[in-house]
Length: 197
Length: 208
Image 1 (cartoon, rainbow over the protein chains, first blue to last red):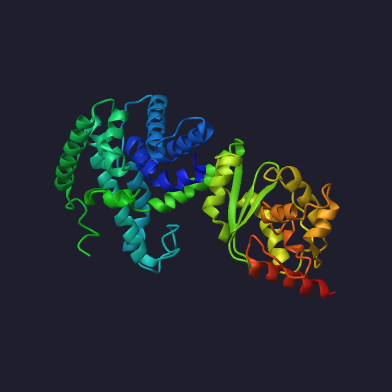
Image 2 (image 1 turned 45 degrees about the vertical axis):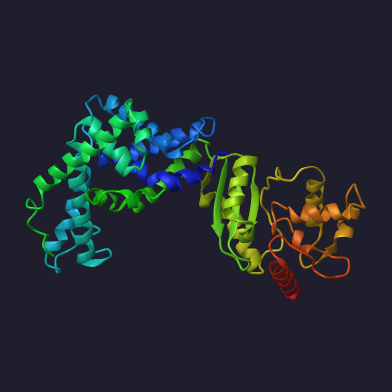
């Protein structure tokens, strides 16, 4: 008995967005998310949907491949571009005197300087993690994303990657290990300002 | 599934601002899906003096009004089976119904002027529903009186069933059907809700 499609959006919208961001970058993820859910809705419920999330992630993965094919380039996933580009301009008001005319829209809207600073830091932290994920070898990256970010079981990840459950589990573990090393390597030292608060 | 809880701490940062992003994407999904004719059932929730109401509509018209006590999740699941699982929360598509109900509860509307999709009521039940608007605002009729209007004038119990399963309560006024002894009888929105509606209509009907 297929559930109302709305339930799939509610339950898996965020996980699918993470997958999209990991596979095509934060900037283009919105388009791929949209294409994924439209395609899913179009096929729904004629497709036998045993696990809604695995099904949606499969569609998202295909849409991401289409996206790269159309763009005519190799996957350059999860670059820090999107999040950082979106966040940095909004960080400027932090250092500006309050008397200046509002050159930066959004900076004074709500939440005050602290709110802006927090959201900028959150964006920078996210960009750092996305960049680290993007630096992983493809198989490890996908295993980490599908298992740890989307919550699929290793067996389902194996279905997507075309390998065994054990191989998917190993790729995920190796990926997390590499990710920790990357994150520790880049550390926090490259952004001296805004830290230590 | 609680993916958030399972996410390793190192990765948690990616969830920042995610809820807002998904909300924004949801809204444009609804627009795009609507433009492509992919929404078979649109729904929204509205507050009312008789509790939260679920309003659901198809391309034909309003197909379901449900009280909270019916279980909105169960009602949506049932619509997925009986109409289509291509169901999305698309509030704007039910603006008219929401507005007319608001006017009704404010005592400013006596008749609903909405396209209705009566597909959830068939046969005799549908015949009964077709007669209910003949009971005017502020008036009541007994189950027996309504039965007498139909092709089966003795089917009093079946009239009761038709009212109890009315897919469009409020808009199709089954609350105006009462017992022959003058007591109000049961109501799928609860007896308190029925009393509130009859009192509302009685009060508003006496105003000029």
